[in-house]
Image (tube, rainbow, N blue to C red; front, side, top):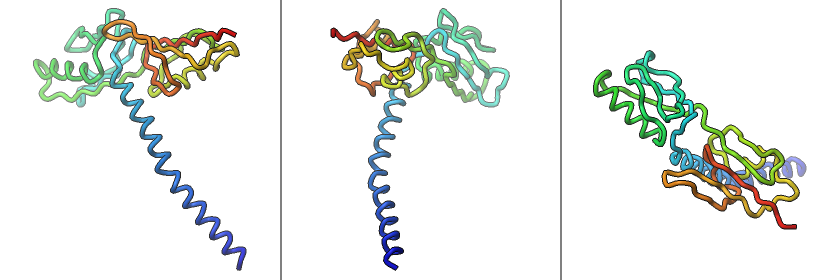
Length: 192
């Protein structure tokens, strides 16, 4: 009887301790999702990106389109359209307006970036180079993808170089800072 009571008390304690950690874990997960979403809304389409554009009910206009070296895509009916420098939402609105103007009544357009341009990691990591971007990537994960720090790495100083509309910006990055497609991550060498 005592043994059954002890097991019951242990089980209840285990369940209650799981519930206590639940909200904190949920908050951390929500924060990570929000950071990822914020990074994705900052993203501007660039040459080399591959887009999946769906015009609902119009399979002949829908498809996968590569952004060419000049920053354009070529779509049926619309021909060549500028895509580079725009957010997914902006391009979606422009395609919707162009189709609505001359071709389709009330078109519904959805755009997804299938393949982003890569990010680059240089300096004191075991495998420097370019790597495919994955949505939600942060600096810590990028360093892990590149094989981690070398023993000569200055782990306290990691710089992200990001291209913006106003030129290149250098950011001293924390491990949880988001990485965007096209970013260059530099890991400095420590002095001793």
